Length: 452
Image (tube, rainbow, N blue to C red):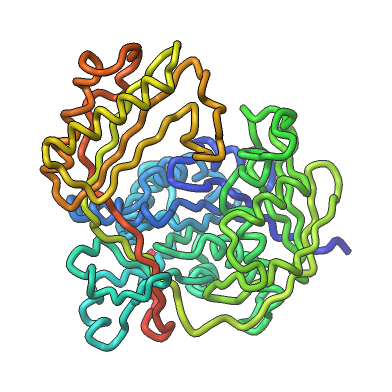
């Protein structure tokens, strides 16, 4: 008897990833689930601002087009979709998707997961004694409370499993962990329990490998990058998952890219803290126990993963206003491009000082010489044919930053010679959104699943 396999395909690694990947994943071969990951920490604050302007917004709008492109696969072939595209407004996202289905004369059963958004409850939570202290500095949230834009707890697999058990064809969440989007379907199909720590940890590892889309199938690959085949037609990764927790990472035939021990290993160390304790709401996965082996062309077997009981906390992603910034650039050409750019920087700083402008920070980069490697670059850029001077400032005072933006353009004619590019025109003042990571008791966060 053939061993059962649950096939989960990654079709999106972030909001802004390939528009064609979801459709290609369901058209290029059989899959059971399509996983679409849209959210990053800064994305939540962007979506919150959109929702404030329009209560019908606040979700990843690219998801609407993605669902339109895979609708036939969902309604006719039974492919199920799990996505965190709901952002800060999962119900509105579901309404938009139902609109797409209705327009096509189809009906969809959508599971909407809510409860991760803590913004409306922040005052109540702080009053109850939840400090939501910064995980690195220990500062209490009260120090920035009046500037908070968004606050979302990272939820795990349970509500997604519940939605699938209630026959949802599409599951839309808010700030789910990226890994739960893959682990939940596998957990649902095999009925893994809360205490099946090794298997849950395996599902988390599968989710970690798939969460960044083509980054584990040849994209952004450091190893042998010159010889990755046909990246223009890169195939996104797929996990063939087995009941014992082992799985094979692969991609559809006749697609570009490469799935190898090297590409999968690179993804495994992405955003890695303590390899012995990769903490999620469902389980703690020990990445040091992962075993990887070549299982054939574009097939990598992953197995042997150990897991442990989860903590009693959830991580909370909080975004808050932290002043203003602006970045200006000029391009200087050969000869002596770096020397010209360095002189322009000194002149600019002296003029800002004479104007009495004070900034929290001024950062200068010489792109083409030392912007990436800093002092380690040595004299590598000394003879560069062109250098981009990039100067950024930040301050709590918008007017101060605005004045800086008017000092870049004059350097074209009253600074060093050789300016060949005034990239982007006058810099724009932008509000800074800062990140505040915190922890909260699991008992405080109550998720809710609605089928619409």
